[in-house]
Image 1 (cartoon, rainbow, N blue to C red):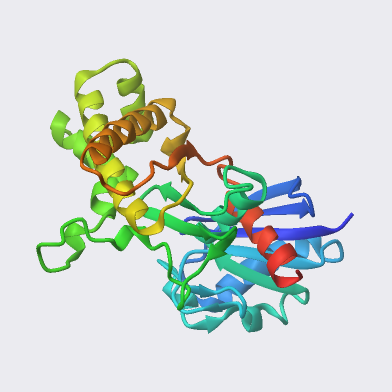
Image 2: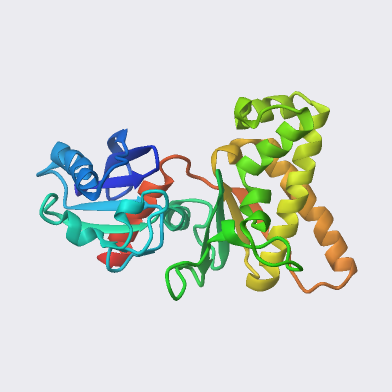
Length: 302
């Protein structure tokens, strides 16, 4: 059976797995992400390769940044600036002498959903992941849409206030991310946001705490409004929501309730938009690696 090294580069850790062609994990682990230099990054990836040298035919990587997935070129690289503007395939070829490919992490997650998850069989859809920011990807005509310069789906930077000059203060990440949700809850509770997280918030919301439920209602109203704006442009069948908080039924249920309310109003005002189905993503922490493997098997090798 064919085997592949799949890698998910994060700001804190580099997760890796040895997978077969069905995306079944044979072995997995993680190592700290280097904060220093390209050379240290290459050696970190090399240390993963050394574990499976002779067993694998390729390395398939997912990473943050604006990436030309066909070439393996990183234009930007999120927080890991030292690997921005570099040919990753060329950088690794001597240290890891097997085939290599890479894809943006949010787009890789969408490929995983398209292959074996919530987007399987969907012609047009949106995949979004809620975390520190809002990761996004578009499925158009049954394929991942990368955009002219590989930057399609950068939802975090979408303005939520079109009547003022664009600044980082009015971007969607400040209203629709998990960080925004926790920040809003901290303000309502008059607490330090650093003392709170998604687990604490949803424990309180699921227990019926009034402040938590009110914040969730407001958050989901804003999210439904944002998704409706996307729908007017894209007209998709389905929206899949990922990220750690997407595991919460209360989030998905409240968001769908707000979508129903919004579309009742939209229909009343003859807005020409069809309500998309809203579901949670199928895959969690392994999504980026699964999508990177799909990219290698079906887009690079064909």
